[in-house]
Length: 402
Ligand SMILES: Cc1cc2nc3c(=O)[nH]c(=O)nc-3n(C[C@H](O)[C@H](O)[C@H](O)COP(=O)(O)O)c2cc1C
Ligand SMILES: [Fe+2]
Ligand SMILES: [Fe+2]
Image (cartoon, rainbow, N blue to C red):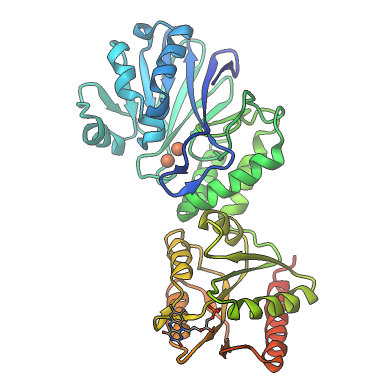
């Protein structure tokens, strides 16, 4: 837990969750995650920006009381109703009896359906609406689909603080640190990329829209204050530029190879194909779909121009763990604009391959033929072909060299 001053008028209450095994019951958290809430002290109004996960409700309320009399808080701004931010609303309102809620028009109804809060207490703000808080002005911007339809951001004009909620956030607990110049940025940018690919990637066009919108308004943001991960005060542009580059996306020259192999036959092809790819000078990100959580695979897929899928035929279908990865790539819309090809070993019928091809095409991949499919144990002739297949994949990735 950290309660720290961010700027003259702003405090952050940040909670490290190191015990949650899976974020959204999906994404592993080897380095934990933080939930950040903010308090703004205007000369006339005191405002709380989001709460934190219910897992920290009690401590959050206690810490908040240490900072401010809850009865003197005028508004809670709910940027986004997902429970990692809204989970302490009920506990908070029990004591903050004079507080009204401000949110996007879409979120008004979500307060009702999730927390049974009536429109009497919840008021919608319009895009660009400003509130004089005394000594500074807080402006609200609707930024839908980052990453729910309800999402909005707030901007504290004179202090230049953008409260961006999930956007510009990252996985990784903060361990008592808070700002970008106090942490090992490389670790958090890596976790930000994984967070982006897992949570935000499916809505990346909306990241571009939001950044264009905020840029066109000429907002001079000096501090980016997200709801997860570090606050960017030393270099606020950095995380915005990263999010934009992941959204476009800007491809790296690399091949991502994802395979499943029950008894090691397809795995024999993997080795030979990797050799071929690496002989072109292109690096390979290699994943055994049965042993690496898809969260980490998506992070590499995000900026990969070429993907290669290896599967045996399994019950006349694609290997189930490859199907699982495909499902995630589809949900996160990470097929479009990328090349994909297929390899693998089968026993008596190559039924997996047309099924996999159909799925890849449906997901928007440019599917590269011919595939490399082998019946039974690969021969030295097959291994030679596998190497050539790898060279072809490497050369394809090289086309993305800038
Ligand atoms: C549970 C199971 C189901 C299989 N189903 C099929 C199948 O439907 N069609 C087929 O051609 N081979 C099937 N096979 C055979 C495998 O595709 C073949 O042994 C292949 O070489 C396995 O490659 P791997 O060692 O990389 O998993 C199956 C094998 C197993 C163990
Ligand atoms: Fe969210
Ligand atoms: Fe969140």
